[in-house]
Length: 266
Image (cartoon, rainbow, N blue to C red):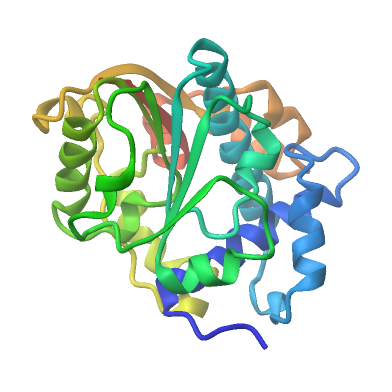
């Protein structure tokens, strides 16, 4: 039987299922066969989620672009650290294939880490609530660090993500932060998404200006705001999603509300 998780923790099944669905497509964006295997192994009713083409393609695309950023960081810093926050059942380490000299840390709630153990190979597992103190203490602070926060922002209320970011950048000597940047409207509108309604999640936080985190006193500097409506992989989207996405790409404002990857250095 699948373990009992709270709604935020249970969202890991949605993203896992979306990556698995993408892996079965002839024009798969992420080609994450390991996620497909996991879905077959787990005793969970994945079909309760209405995995629409936009959810499947969007989840796979944001994961691919974050993976690309992580691979580039590991190539530049083969002695570095990767810190995957809210890792869930993500297979990112398998997909990125970092060199053995990179230390990889997967961080999530204790219940999620227990579920993950034995299902996925990985680096160092840290069971922790990201809003609590102390869990960073065991991680080396003197090496370049890539912090991955995919899907974390909308589940952290108020200024908790800002405070977490300040703790992270004050702990590590240098590094980068990559996240999918929800706008305030996108965070609010999550509550109306069928999958979020299935889980009982009421939406969360976001920010509009990609330079806002530069004002969090966390030492961040924006490197790139990537609109996912404008990347070549959109050509693999099924119709009519492809046409709608390309229409959205004509507007910066609409693209920003859709999906974007934000990359910072500190």
